[in-house]
Image (cartoon, rainbow, N blue to C red; front, side):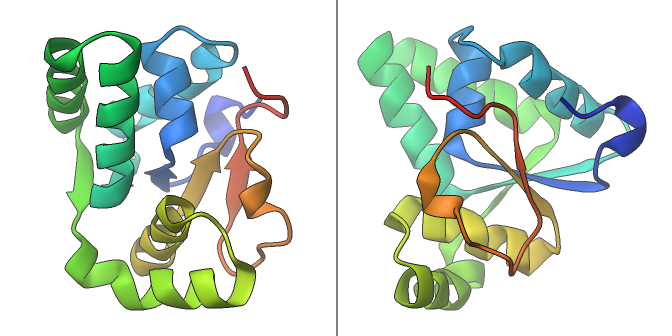
Length: 142
């Protein structure tokens, strides 16, 4: 876990940490420190593609009303959505070079675009990526 003094100035959220946070999965307390940081001094971002992932996963777990509420909470928290028009070239490059899932490629592209640290979970799509700083909030899937 990262202490408050070690939190990055610019945080990009992948879907797994946000699902953990909103669904109270293991590691949600760690993700909460990053969300709180965005409500404080850090800048927070989420790819539009990642936001779509979070929405459909929360919808599948709970329902559409909860998924819409999660999207609203993210916007209110100060986590800014980065639209695909800004990051698709970098996402395509990550997809070509490293073959992550397309959503993960957009998260990587967003981190590169805003020069931020990408917060991820146990997803092995990020193994071997060195183009952007990556922090894992957990090492095992929930």
